[in-house]
Length: 494
Ligand code: BES
Ligand code: MN
Ligand code: ZN
Image (tube, rainbow, N blue to C red):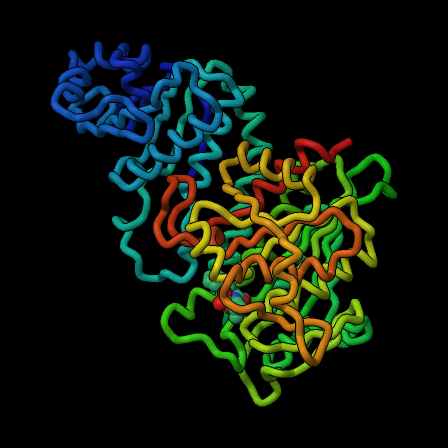
C-alpha cells in the first residue's frame, strides 16, 4: 500500500473510495457540501434516511452509482470538534481504511478538509497502523479476502510538508509493525535465539546490539533468569541494545527493560490447555522495547537510550525448575519459586539489576505481560502503571494521553510486602490472588536500587481479541512503542 499527499479537491475521484468528514452540528462540513453538490444532493438524502448525526465514532457509507465520481463514500463523524485535531484525523483515516480497504476498489481518498501537514501526516499514520496484518503463513488466502486498496491519497493544504512529516512518522509505524510482527510470530519460529538474531539485525539502523548467552549470564550470577529457561531446549539470551544519539556520548541514558518469554507454558506449574497458544505473546514487553529502540534510531533521537531484553522460554522438562526451588538472583537476593508460572518477574529481576549495575540510567521503564490479574483489574484498554517516582509517572501518563495508549496508575503499598515473604528464602515469587498485579510489581521493586523506575504491566494490552480502535486491528498491538517514543520526545532529548 502506497500513501500520497495531494491538495484538497485535487484528486480525481472516479472509481475510488472517498472518506470525508460528514455532518458537524447538524450541517454538512464544507468538503461534504461541495461533494453533495456534485452528487445532486445524494449525501443529504442519505443522511435524511439514516440515524447518522455526525457524532464521534459514527459512520455512514454510500454506494453512489456515479460514473465520474467516487464509487463509494464514507461519511465519518467527528463530534463537536470543528477543528480537526491530529488524533481525530488519525482515528478517522484508520476508520476509513477499516471500512473501505476490502471493497474491491483500489484507491482510497481521505478528505478531511483543508488540514495542515501534521494533521495529514498523522492521518497517514492511522492508515499505516490500521492496515497491519500478519499474513506471512497464509499461503491459500484468496485475493478477494485481502485488502483491495493499494493507493491511499490524503488531502491537505500542504502536500509537500505532509510528505516530509510522514517520512518520520512512517519510521514509527515501521517500528510498531516490527514489534507487532515479533508478537505475532509463533514460538516454534521465534525462540530466544531467533529473537536475538532479529534484534541483532537492528544494527543496520545504527544501534549497537550485544547478545549474552547462558554461559555469560551464569558468570554474572543471573540465577533467576536462567532458572526460568533451564527447562527449554532453546538457549536463553539477554539482548543489550544501545542508541547513543545525545550530543554527549557520556550522558546518562534512559533505559527500557522488556520481558521476553517467547513461550510461557507455565513450566512445571503448567497452564491449562485452553488459550495457552496466546502465550506466544509473552514477549510483548521485549518486542515493545526492541520497537522503541528501532524507532529512536530511525528518527535519530537526540538521546542516549538502552534497551534490555530478557529472552527465555518457559517449558516443563526433566531439567525444568520445580516449585519450591530456591534460586539466587544477580542482586544476591534469594527467591523461592513457589509457582513456575510466575516466571516473568524472575526474568526481570536479573534484567533490571544488570541494567542498573552496568548503565546507572536516568530512569528505567520495564514492560511486561506480567499478570492475568491486570486484565481482570483494567480490561483491555489500559496497562497497569506502577512507579516509585511521581515525575516519571506523570511523564508517562502525559505520553499516554498524547498517544492514546492507555495507562492507569496502581499503588505499591508497603503493607502488601508480607504477601511475598518466604519461610525459606528472601522472598517467594507469588503473593496469592489478592492484588496479584501489585505483589508482582512489589517483587520487581525489590530489584530496584534508587533509580526512578516504572513498571508497565501490559498483559492487558499487548494482544487484542477484537480490534477496539481501528488503529489496533485484532492481534498484536505493539503497545508501548509509541508511548515510550513520545516519552523520550517530550522530555529527554538534547
Ligand atoms: N504470562 C503470564 C501472564 C499473562 C496472562 C499474560 C494472560 C498475558 C495474558 C504470566 O507469566 C503468568 O503466568 N502469571 C501468572 C502469575 C501467577 C502464577 C501468580 C498469572 O497471572 O496467573
Ligand atoms: Mn507465567
Ligand atoms: Zn509469563
